[in-house]
Length: 487
Image 1: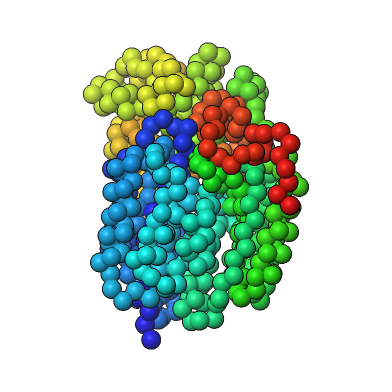
Image 2: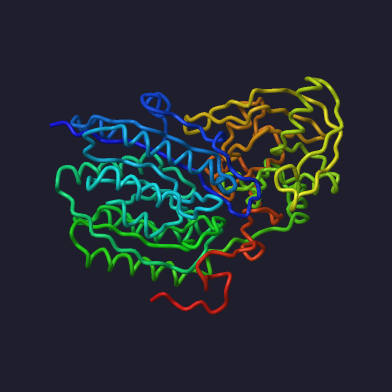
């Protein structure tokens, strides 16, 4: 027996507080057999699923569209309609599909659509009919009723920082095989938690959140456990469904699913005060960097391109310039005009240029600097997971003791490869700025003497009360006082 399993992916994490819209052309899109070329032998969900299906030997994979984009602002309506429409059209072209695996992030938002993934799953269900359908999710997914309704099993990550992409794909594939074999009859329980969470206690290896995740893993290890996770949402995707959730799927055991979901949900709610970020002022951060021997890493979570921010914050750069910082610093920034000016001048030239505030001018005012052009690049590099990144025109500028990586478009500044592939080794510096709240720790903790979460402005600030929430569930912790218990 051979089963035909349809494969599709669409992923982007949105900050609705980022004023720069995301456009169709910013997505990296693979179709058909090119999906296998792009993702096999990577550390991704798709690769994990492919390997499980290959081992089974009964699966014929039917690749359609795999589209992903660096986190950013809301997707413009025509662009989102085009993207989802192309995926749906590709699915309609297929015949005799027995099951589907859909790889999602879950925190995508359009300018006029708060639940693109739920919309896609609903439409795919209408096209494919009542066949097994499993989707994998980031645990920062904004879980919606449509997602839960139209997928048989939702399989979320279990790690933060996320190091289990591949394993999540494997878990999703095994669940899909169980549905195809007829050995699984999913029963789902969801507990909604009116809370937004940030901070180091979310680190699953060391923080209190890890205890909740291990409860989920214990559920999956039981005889009836299929999938379980705590889905905390992306706090910057301000849509009506934004809150946290516990989602448990068991095999024909609704009572066990509900008991586990409520038990894990109560644990999260009772510990909600711990799940808030402790930030350090920019002035104090710079003092700590000056006083520390070895590499200091500044986490600019407020401008995290990994969370949907614009990437053009110059707040830390301005602070370093104003303080007369003399140590060697490595700083990323998204600034297309500055990159273009560097390309026009050429390597070795000295240019007067403004940096920052080109994408989120309401928060960041450009700063004028005199810089030497150290190197120029086409912006293509390889992320740690084996996939390709592209910042387009990319320049390395030297301003005093600072090396500034200037990209034309946003990229993830989480691992070291984004610097290394442009001739910059973070270990050679006294200070490195990353645009990530915690994901960078996987790549930096082993070489850093000190990690500092810096309190600066931005559309993904962990200081949640600094952001103009309008649409999320209310009342919700910590935005409101005396939020009633959901239990």
